[in-house]
Image (cartoon, rainbow, N blue to C red; front, side, top):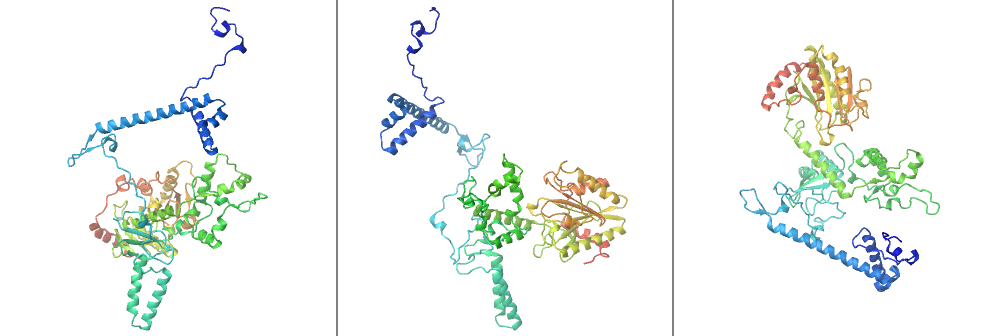
Length: 575
């Protein structure tokens, strides 16, 4: 054997079988430490369950007492390191907390603030509000009623004093002993009032006063504790049922982790495995409930296509064939559900948004106050007015429905007849002045409940004949290159109301009564609200100060503007 041989056992003349066994060295806290600690934990749990000692069970699992002692020593080592690291962190935080302070910038308060309450720029951070747990007294109902009461939603603080109650389950909201009447009961009471007036009864005035008081209570009022009470309707501003007003759908999962198996209970035959039904919706809802929900519409049923598309997007193994869809029908048909509190909270939020839009609307009548426009002519359901901003061209006016709607497609036939009458009269009036009229409507951000209006802009003849070509070219260029809807929808033949839908935001233009075109707005953020005015301004070489951000008129100037317009309008005023 050479002197340079590194194998010590070979130098000693030992064969491979005679090499002594070397125990594998374990380094505490290495990559396999978690597995060893998990094995030791299972041994201790088994010893506790069987009532035996840890040494006895460990000897069976490890095979030797040395390996068991080694595992116990490693556990002590890891626990000691954890305690040491935790103590070091506490000491570091305590030292920094006691030594470092940031002086407040405010001159009024000369107090010091701790560094954990300020950000990197020295500004005080807002702390998240914590709601205290409900007490036993707060959980007790404040009003006594024979029927079970729905939860009263109060989304604002108590200082605001706003209480909202569902309409279809109105509790005793105004006094402990008096109940709010329903609509049917109010109608019956109104019939009694009319009958008493006709018959000349002595208590007719008392019944009328009582009826008026009940109407105020039904619409809303102030309860005994001084809170303002609003009755939450069962339908939204678009006439669709809120989810809280419908019965719970059995296909909706109550938990978001997909572990709820109640909705798939008894869907298959336990013996043959044959499918009996796809879900428990047949048990939760009656046929009349389904018909009512489908006819009236709701947010839960109107988004079925969107939810189905989301299911396909999140399914990596989706196959576009009937066999796969039939096999996964229970999964594809299940929808993420909301709790009753979340449904009620959404309804309250939407109701508040609608009421706020109605209160701030400049185009609506607020009691005896007229709209904040220069009124020209008032019909039964539609009125003609001048805009409260600088006109794009002389004679620029607006046809506005009296009812607060987000789209003219939501109006009935009588209102549309009045709109057509205004359009025909404006065409004849401006025809004498050598101008044609372009009518256009822009409907965007329907969730903000904006009051819609049709703008009428006169354009001189010579340029007016090319208006349809200008608008068609502008519609082709606006928005994305690839869109899901047609860029231009020709509504001349079928008509505006049969070609467009009120659920989607859109832009529509009438070039007189000869031609009309519509455009579905797919991306509202990229579509300019002044699109129609910008197109007309390009036709007439008008600067952006007239259509981008025109200046507002003061209400004191409305009188002179009305007199100028009425000189030509009085001849054609059909109202």
